[in-house]
Every structure is written in C-alpha cells, then in structure tokens.
Image 1 (cartoon, rainbow, N blue to C red):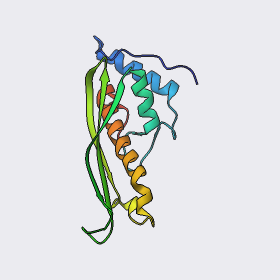
Image 2 (tube, one colour):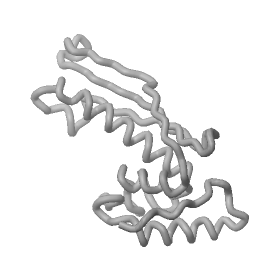
Image 3 (cartoon, rainbow, N blue to C red):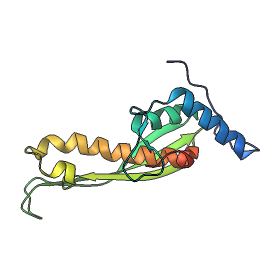
Image 4 (tube, one colour):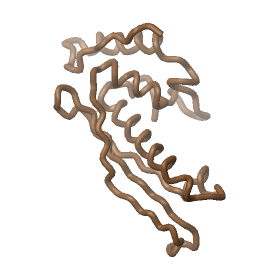
Length: 151
C-alpha cells in the first residue's frame, strides 16, 4: 500500500478543495469491504474502523479514549442475566487541540451478543466495540467525511 498523504487539519480557504482531496484519497486508498461497506437501506456507505483509522492518520489527528460509564453485573440481579455495559468517549486532537469528540457504547444485551453462552468472555469485545463506535463517530465529525460515509 502506498503511503498516506497528510492533509492539514486546518480549514482550507475553499471548502470544495478539502472535499475533493478527501474524495480523491478515499478512491485511492480505501477499499470496499475493509475500510467501508454497505448496509441495507443506507444511502451512503458505512465507515468501518480501518477506514476511520486511515482518515485519522491522513489528517494527522491523535486519538484519546476515556471510559465514561461502565456496568458490570456478573450476578444478573437486574434481569436474571448478567449485564455488561461500556461507554467510551473518543477525542481527536490536532497539535494538542481538541478537534472532535464523540461517545460510543455497547452492552451484552444487544441482539448480536445477548444469546452468547459465556457472557464473561464478551467483556473485552464489548469494550472494543464501544471504542470503535466512538472513534468512527468522532472521525466523521473531525474530517467532514459524513458527506461520504454513515456510521
């Protein structure tokens, strides 16, 4: 893969120049199925974590995660089954200045995780999924890529 070209995070005088650069970069460096993909009923492709990471590098942004909230109910006292819930905040900075911030969450009662046999093995997966959701959202905000992708 060719090296990524750095786009200055400062606004360009002509916004259409930034959009053209972003579109050109996505066409040249981002692959369908790995960096983005389709979802039924969606009008724009969905940005995946690898694509978000490429955009973060392209804009020279630093990524910072912070856990905002967590519930770890191993006993199932709430509903008779264990509940694991994680919410993370992702802040993207450029030269130490916050450019965008977003939160993402994930929990063990979500449809795709609820019927797994060993809920305790899910803890790391749920944390990473919450971080990924926060990262993709913050990336779309920071880069203006919402014109091209959905979350």
